[in-house]
Image (cartoon, rainbow, N blue to C red; front, side):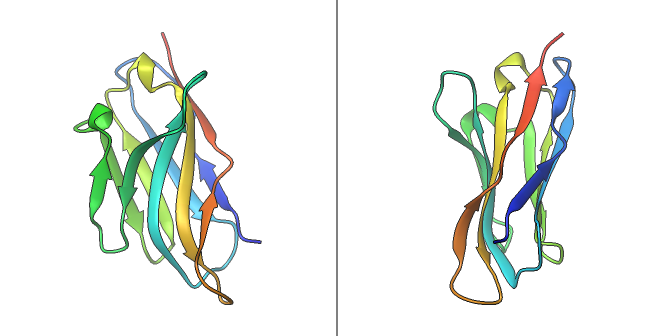
Length: 120
C-alpha cells in the first residue's frame, strides 16, 4: 500500500525556518487535495494548511503570514515552508492527502509524522 513519507523536521531556534516535504512512497496516478496538520503534546490534531490540485490554499489563522504551503503536481509532492517559527509551533507535523493509485478510487492517507521543535 502506498504511504506518505515526510521529511524536513528538526530542532530550530525561535525566529528560524524549516521546510517540510511529503511525497508518496511509490507510484500513484494522481494526488488530489494535500495538506499539513500538527499535534502538540496534550492537544488535538489541528489543521495547519491545505492546497488543492489547482493551487487553492487554506491556512490556520495561527500560521497565516508565516507558513506557505505549495505543491509539485508532477512529483505529487507537497511542501510547507515555515518561517518566523515560535515555540508554540512545536508539534508533530503530519502530511495528509487524497491519493489515487492505478487501481481503485482515491483514498485519504496520513503520513507517519515528523517532529518540529522550536526552542532556544
